[in-house]
Length: 376
Image (tube, rainbow, N blue to C red):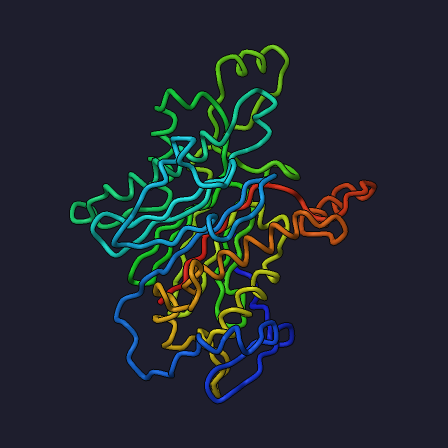
């Protein structure tokens, strides 16, 4: 994985200036008239916090922004009970978690994408991906940082994996995972295994973009549980399911700052939207609502970001924070792109690259899950 050169967007998403707030040409004045926050010169907090929301949509189901949305509240951390089918979010074989780490202000979050190919063996990988997220959330919540200095992303992935392996109700399957440990000191550690991934955005720039881990085209690294019957079959006929481990994940460390936007997503997003597509969506909202402002030094984060990321900071009933708006916007755009049969997305372009004679067009229908964390 390597950082990408910053990608400019001013030419892609121009913004009109006004004396009270800035209005993006993608919105009408009415969309913003109740959201302009008076400029404040208050000092920034000494430590950083992460304002987080997630949005998701299962393959073959209608996307409902009202219900397919989760907003993280560090003071009230409900569990989705991913291990119980009836209590799972409407994300299909994709899953996610967001939780505080012990009693600290640090947070852990991430996405997991159950590998659909296991269905050919009669196994639903949703049990694996949702179980993994449930286990990692529980592990992070129970971590006592007074007894250990920190929790590492690779360590959390390993402990979550060990718990799923020990769970006799999960008989098989596979999943990718991209998880983060985000500290109030601005340190972000990410463990990424497979073709889920993340980007770190700053005003008008892609600061970092992860690279997928694949064995071959459309064959991502994956954690897996292989049932004995499938192992026996592979010994007779050869081949067999892929089996990677948490130690195979790519571990990267990053420094975040006020105004950064982190986007973690499964391949249902990345196969249909490029990093530049997501930068355009994020910039549209961040500039439109005054979270990123233009000054003599260029585009930068504003102090109003603290208000816009609090419940009610945006005058809407459900997506009432900037992070919720961003998560819903990305999930919605990915959903529409996946169902487009004419406009080629990133997956279609990869198909043409590896199989130039294939007549694959449009998007790629899949489960979709995205987490957006705005750094304040």
